[in-house]
Image (cartoon, rainbow, N blue to C red; front, side):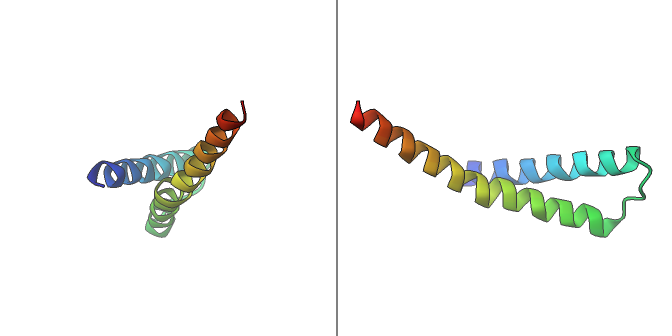
Length: 68
């Protein structure tokens, strides 16, 4: 569980850093609300949605291998 949390937090930080850089490059003025929102969005993507998609993909591959 610790490894899972570390991955989710690192993905969230990376997501926020990229969003900050892109907004800064295109002339926007990044503020703390934007950074905090990007951190939350990155955590939701990496910690919630990504495992759900991976589990569905894994189950689909298992069903396909059972048919063969």
